[in-house]
Amino acid sequence: MKPSCRGPAALAAVLLLLASACTARAPEPSTASAYGAYVGYEPADVGRLGELGAWLGGPVPRVGHVYLPGDRWSNIEGAPGFLESWASWRRADPRRMLVLDVPMLERTEADLPDSTVRTELRRGAAGEYDGHFRTLARRLTALGVPDTIVVLGWEMNGTTYTHRCGPDPAAWKAYWTRIVRVMRSVPGQRFRFEFTPNRGLDAIPWPRCYPGDEVVDIIGMDAYDAPRGLRFTDQVNEPYGLRAHVRFARAHGKPFSYQEWGLYENGDNPVYMYGMLTWFARERPLYQAITDYCPHGVWGCRAHPRSSAVYRSLMK
Image 1 (cartoon, one colour):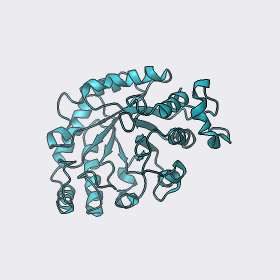
Image 2 (cartoon, rainbow, N blue to C red):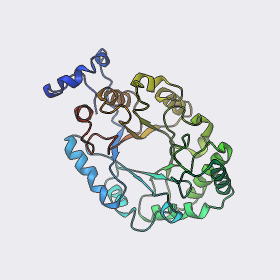
Image 3 (cartoon, rainbow, N blue to C red):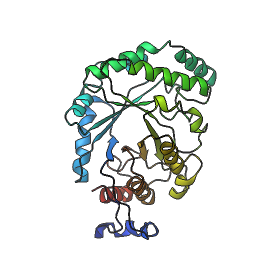
Image 4 (cartoon, rainbow, N blue to C red):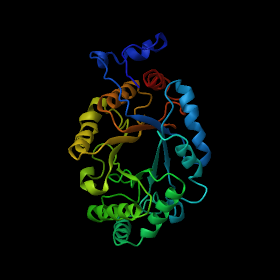
C-alpha cells in the first residue's frame, strides 16, 4: 500500500479533508508488511478474505485473523471442525499468516469480578490449565499450521475480558509465561506469541503487564478510533499510544503489529483512516488487520463511505 496525496477525481472532496497531512511526501510502503482483516470467525468466513481482496482490486490479503471462542475450555482448545478451513487457507500459500486470538481463561466475556479473575490467574500460573493449551498446540501442529501467530490474552490492560491483567499483574505475567512454555514444548511447533494491549492507558499501563522478551515474539496493539473527539495526532502522542508502542517494541528488539484497528466512536472519519494507513507505511509493522464489521469496518460496513473511499484508494 502507498498513501498518496493524489486520489481519483471521485475522491476529491474526501482528500481535501486530508490536505494538512499532504504537505510532505507520503512515506514509501513496506514490502515486508502484510495486510488482512477480521471478517468473521466461523469456518465459512474464510472465503470472505478473497472477496475483500476483489473489492479492493489490489493486493490479495495475506493475513487471516480469527478468534477462538472463550466460553468454555473445549473451544479454547480449538474444537474439532472450527479451525480446519482457516488452516487450509494458510497452507495454500506460504506467504500467508494465520493470526489466532486465544483467550487465557474460559468465561472470557462473563464480566467476572476482580476477585474471581485474580483466583483464576493464580490457578493458571500454578499449572492447573496447562493441558488445555497443550491440546491447542497439538491441534494446530496436526493441522499443518505450526507457525500460527498466537495472540494470547489480547487487550489485557482493559476491563472487557476475564483474562485481564489488572487484578494481579504478577500472576498474569507468570500465567502467560507458563502457557508459552507449554505450547512451545509440543514437537514441531514454530508458534510466534504476540502481546497485544489496547492503545492508551485504559485500566492499567500496558507495560506493567509485559511478561518479558523471552516469551514474547511480537508486540501488537489494538488501535480503534476512540474515544469520541480524540484526534489522530493525539492517538499517536498520548501516553501508551501509537508512538509509545513502536518505541517500546524497538527498544525490546521485537517486530510490532496491529491485529485490530478500525473506526469506532468518531464515526465515518477519513482523517483517521488516512492517518492509520500513513502510519503503517511509515513505521512498517509486521502486519495490520482491520476489523471489518460495523462500527469498525470499511468493506463490511456501509455506514462509512468516506473512510471506505480512502481505504480503497490508499490500499491499491
